[in-house]
Length: 355
Length: 270
Image (cartoon, rainbow over all chains, first blue to last red; front, side, top):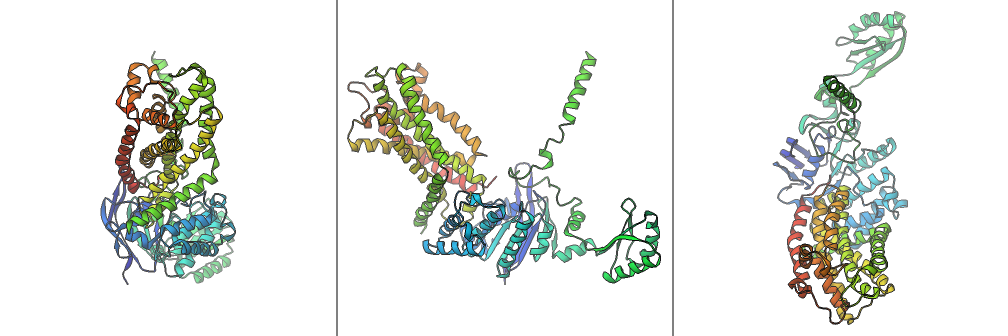
């Protein structure tokens, strides 16, 4: 079966930044692609191009086999989009929002109403159906927004950061909803800043930074790229840390890293729980007391760090136009303020001295 | 097949905007309250100091005043179009509309239509206020209806300028400030509140050719609010006030409908 979404050489430049710098994608029908990257990496730009909201400067794309640039309206019939900021009308009720979207997909008056009620029921919004969505919690609004993307039962869904800004409970609920959706065979392209989310929901992950794809594969492939599992161990007495290393290193597959301040040892291993048991036995025989021990699988955070050299929380410099609704990124915050007056004072002093 | 969906889609969008008027009464209260204040302010505070042709008593000024207030109010009413669109862009609602297989022009058409509905409501409130302070229609019902219609047509054409601006500016605040700076002089440097003859020559020429003066003059004539024997200023736009108003309305529509639609197609949320 053909790919549901393809893109070749997408480039998008804004005045001063290149938001996308040659992106190729292919998403097999019925699969879930997670686009993973920090703020400003270019994720939203990709979604906007694929959903016909934005024209790329270079490159081409197809969605459901239809050329995005040549036949945008044909594409719109076949997709559902749920944006980064809940694009529901807060003055309309949940029902009115979905009914309106149904009408604009040309489902007809009767079918639009039925579909709105169906979706409200399956997204557990029935009780709130006739309240303006302004009164909804963040999680309810996101669910309503997602329901909006499903009104016409499109074969391909785009979700742009579906859980950003939700509390842990809202996030878990949203994940369940998305997993049910995917189980129904919908092709999904999902953007996220949360590595855990991509790991949980996506079949394939594309890591994007500064408008470029820097890695792709399944979650397991990406983890393997960073290295296997590690043994992490904290000794009770700092004096025993070196002895513990000497005893354990023969069990590992590389050198152990020590953190004396935290009395911790971290060592790559292969063999998992067996190695762990063996390590505990060796330490017990040597009467070295331990406070904590565990196996650590690399997280996608580790993946990100090793691929980009910076943590995923860090804001990229390139990318979309600044978003006003986001919490301000460090450059916007007056971090320089303390030095500002100081520098002025220094200048004043020197000029006074000169005069 | 394109044409029917424009109308049905525009209807759906207009319905949504009208629901919003119902749910956010502040907006309606604000847009009607300030004109009522203006009526009272001019009728009872400034009115006594302003002499109009055809009579010096305050009652004559109130007759003169109402058409001017109507014109100013419907033009400010037209700005709701732009403010509403700027807000929708910012909140991502335009993104949602643009991702749907609806007729692209329906969002703007629906918006401008619902703003006409809003203006009709505002005109009713204003007319009642006018009647309370002693204004009256002295013409036939048909002429009066034409007067209101002309005001609405002019405002509708202006709302397309606002639609274009609303899609262009970065925020509702910028939109409101920008339009205020333009609309305030346009509606005051005109025959809306004072007779043109009282203006300095340069301003007088501007005011004579200002379409706001023409729409005011035309509705004054159609409501029968110009006393017997008062001459119409001897300039073409005011001698042919109805026609001049319609010419400007047509220009606004012809220029700004395509511009606004072009801007809509390329806008994204910010």
